[in-house]
Length: 229
Image (cartoon, rainbow, N blue to C red):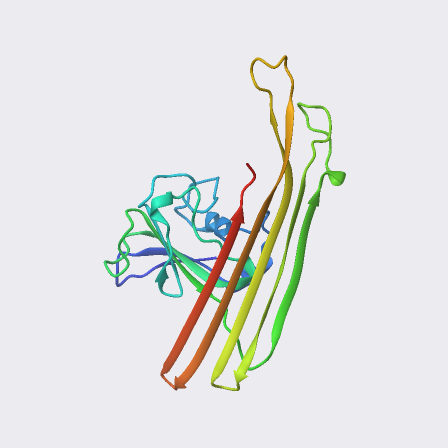
């Protein structure tokens, strides 16, 4: 992580490099958890925001130069999700960002996604957690049921060598669970409702090198989310 203070401005920022994104293990694969490496981030609960759970308007996320923050949903949920393998690097500006960014009272997150190159390259990965490997809970004195599967991959390369490139990333998560309810007035009967958290995220990034100093980039993203009831 590089902490940078530009002496020509009052901006204070920290950069999370491509090597840190690829080498630092993250439980849950939320790239924003790496924000805790940046000086000035004091939250110990990074979810969809480096600020943890706060009111909306205090954070702005810019991906490839486009604002993607969902302020109407606040910072605790509803923010766009990207696979860790789709992120090349990002910067967090914690203090005194200039007026060209705006729309945030506290923080700016500048994200750059990966691009294709003249060589084809890709990744496949899977992260699987199961209660078969867990110890007994210290309160319940038994192993609590748990299962979580995260999987995905990336692929990128040239369409036209030296001119047109593409990069695609997909990540999915499946977390089966059960909801329990003991309604009042039914003699203490407990009802169990099986459900499952299901998410899918997609990213397609294309770059066209028009001339030496002119490049056209197009990025499309998608995200589906089914939360347990």
